[in-house]
Length: 456
Image (tube, rainbow, N blue to C red):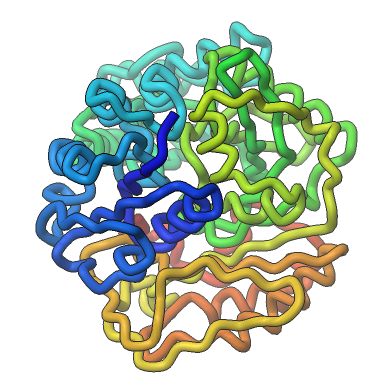
């Protein structure tokens, strides 16, 4: 169906896709900005095309330039990775309109995942538990106040057409709502070109648990187990693991069935993630569908043995799924630490620069997904994620111990990174015991609620 794949992304995810394609015997095309000319993904691909200047809007978000690069190189499929255009329905339509296979969900899936209000209505109709929320977009502050009196505080203001932690504000009372509503509206407009907001009940100190789903074009849908994503800062995940230490076997079974029902409710295709919040009493609520491969997909791969990027490609080529969750032989525990080029001691300030000293950890149970190499100049223009360190063992305790050892071995200097923060978390008794929720990180970032900066 296709034999050459253009990878419409950069960094570690571009490398991840290129490697999967090579193992499947497919040719690859890397696109890059002028700032990424020396990036590793341009060296590993069979061909490379510069698509514009450093600024993302003129390169990695430039649909016309990417489609033209695919035409020039004869690529007949496009993999978007995550971020950038990965959840852009217009990009998926542009690819198919140009005669190329878009390796990912359908344009309708992508558009619905961005329309969070419509998605929640679909989930409610399918019997998937949803958080009490506004029935539609909230026009103004007066309407918001009326709704919040009905729903009850605390509440979350969220961008109807966004994600990634932007446009989200916690309001504990009416005074906070009056202050945060216009801020959220402005931020949503700036980030997504859409200032529509909705309001939902805030689940206090929940766990954030997501289920990986796969679906083919023949009506087959399955999940591949869950990922625990509660260690996060300002709604941006820092550490993920699979399975979750907070789920009972009964709850895992119930949530897995709900994830499959959610995927069927939107006629989902390819790889995606159904995200839930789990309250302190074990009740769970649908949050959203992420219609793409996730940053944290390696932990699922490590415990299932399934290469999710290859599955994306295989399903996009028209293959049948061929298995269900119960067929998988899950093995052990996996943990992922996102290594960001940021200084945790100075408000997580981004720290671009030249990598003068670099050493990757090794040993049993260690995987490192990164585009770094010694001498690489880390650009200042892009997301601060520089590596994903994943460890695997038969037990959670073993995976934590391997992670601590691997973090101590990992050298990325002289820039500042989040490695020291991850080491503190690995030593935390509550983390080691699996006792945590989405508020955990505040013990290490005490000024979290006062920080107005957002990670990418």
